[in-house]
Length: 190
Image (cartoon, rainbow, N blue to C red; front, top):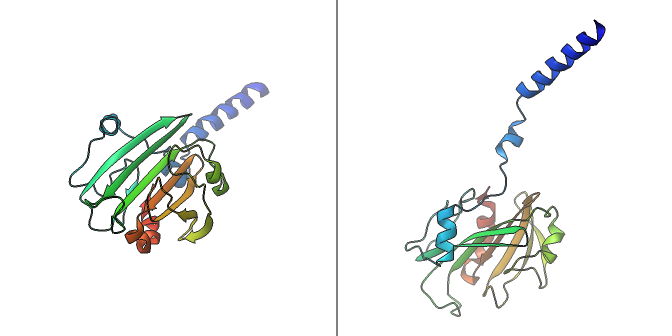
């Protein structure tokens, strides 16, 4: 009879454990934001949004501060080596070599091994690597790695951080938007 009581007690505990809700923080943390099938098709076709999408352009991400002056935008999806790079780029009609060109690129990278800021220097990104002279700064509650934009990314400032294990966010702001970069970073919510 003693064994049956232990078994019954364990069954009740197991049942109760399944009924006890997880902490709110754990329940609110979905996996890494992923593009919809429609967004993947749009990216593959290199379709442009005119006018550009707004704060919810990246599914699962909210970009609360988008500077004014953009005329078009587009989704980019790149899957390789077990990671997914999912982004949206806002830009104006000026030539990319024009120093007044306005461009904002926000990307989420689903990289299961990402857990520390220092890993970004050797991250397996296809575009936008932290290969130059970097510095770490605090923007709101985030520790962010930054560097000057290089030739492939254009002029401006490039920033990135590990939002949580497996989720990296990067932002490239062209030179006219650099004064607003901290505000852009603070306004990004996953």
